[in-house]
Length: 73
Image (cartoon, rainbow, N blue to C red; front, side, top):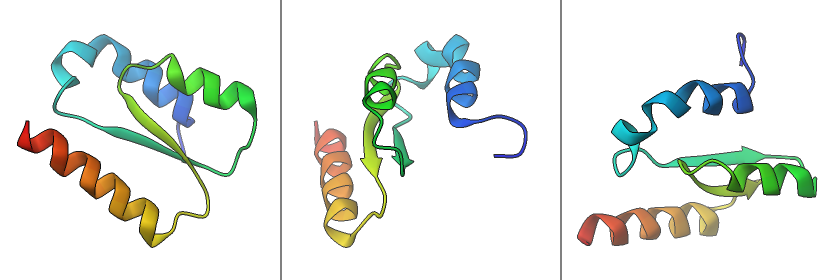
């Protein structure tokens, strides 16, 4: 991202978290296998899941199913 990295973006969203919760799902797509990144992602309530690259069709279908399930509730 040209002006900020993904963590900075999540930090910028933090003040708006109450407005976004339930309306916004953030999936982090990363090539990082660092345990620290996985743990850091868990500290952001808006992050639905961290996904490792490369993403495949099964992963996309799982995301779609998860979102459809939440929509039905």
